[in-house]
Length: 219
Image (cartoon, rainbow, N blue to C red):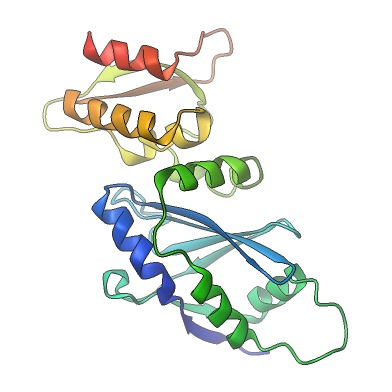
């Protein structure tokens, strides 16, 4: 095998959709053959460590891939260079076994590209991130602020001109069970009130519900 360049341009529609919704996160699963692939992207302005990265969790083999993505994503360019190791672990995920016809990696990528959804509702993202988070959180600790603090304890005011960080708000996706519309409304209220969420890792703290957080914002 040799390094293979491919434009995963099927991502364009949901990438632009996420930007338009001010929800700079992608998470969805594609099943191809016997392989199960969960794709994730985090592209807030704060996401310096994960910007232009495509994360792929291989569900059968529990391998986690981090792939650099090149090009103008707004224009539909998502160029990825798959090295020998990337290709090998993906082939293992497909459980192709030995022998048979020679595997065509380019055809496989075309099939994946065609299965990328054209629209991605927030609830679908939430459900998928929550489903795989126990397996991927160690690899994605940098996409949430203070990843070790998982207990929602309240809110705190921000200085004039500041707004809540996406990396803090994103913790609502993985550490609460709120529905998409509830979280959308809560994030909008936090931004309007210029307050952010306060989290802790102290086990003796009683966790606040999302309804309680909303009442604190409105108080």
